[in-house]
Image (cartoon, rainbow, N blue to C red; front, side):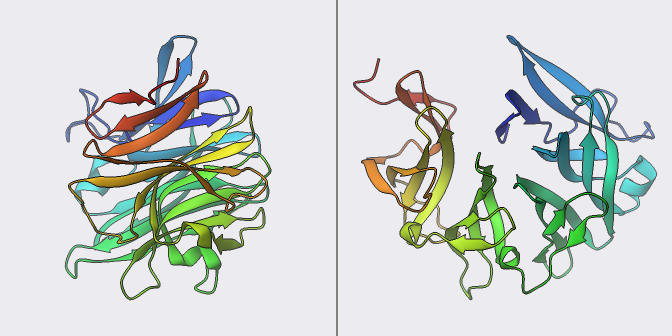
Length: 290
C-alpha cells in the first residue's frame, strides 16, 4: 500500500504491483488494478490495460485517471520496452482507456503522482537509465486531448514529488525534492489552478511527510520532520504537526512537536482525534483525545 485517495467522495487505492495468479510470462496481456471502498468492502477493478504498476489515481473533469508503467503485453515488457501510462475511466473503473503511453528502452520509466487543479491534470514521473544509473524527471500536463510534456522553464519541472494533494479551491499542494539544487533538498509548493508553483518558504528546512485536508474546519495538517536533506534516514525523528488555513496553505503554526523512534508516515484528523500512522504499521492517537 502506498496511498489512499478520496475522490469525488469515494475512497480509492491504486494497485501498485500486479500480483494476480495469472501474472505470468505465459499470459500475453498485462492488467493492472484499482480499488474503491463501497460501504464496508473493497471493490477490485482489474481493468487497467498495460498496468504492471499502477501508482496513483486522481479525479479530473468528471473522470477518474490513473498513472503508472508497464506494457500492453509480455512481448513488449520482456523485450525491454517499458512505457509510462496515463489511463482514464468514465464508469467508476469498470473499464479504462489508455490516454497516453510513452516508451523507454534504456531502463525504467513511469508516471508516479497525479495532481488535479481546476484547469489541468499534472503528471509527475521519471526515466531512469540502467547503464548510467541516472534519472531524469518527466513531468507533464493534461487538459483533454494529448498529454503535453512540461518545458524546462515551467515551475513544476523542478519538482520530483513525494506526495500531492488537490485542494477544494482548485489549487493543490506538492511536496518532495527540488532537483534544481546541486544537493537535492526537500521543499513544498503551492500550485495555483493555472499550474504556477510557489515555494512555501515557511516550510523550508523541514521535510513534509504527509498532508491532510480537514474539510470541516477548512484547515491543512502537515506532518513534518526537522531538516530538509533529501536522502537522510535518521534513527530518531524530531517531528511536528503544523496547521494552516486552506485559504493560505503556507501560513503555518505549530500544533505539537515531539521526538519519536516510531517513523511517523501519515496523518489524519477523524472524529475529533488526531491520528498518526507509522512505518511499522501502527496507528497512534494523540493522548488526551477521546
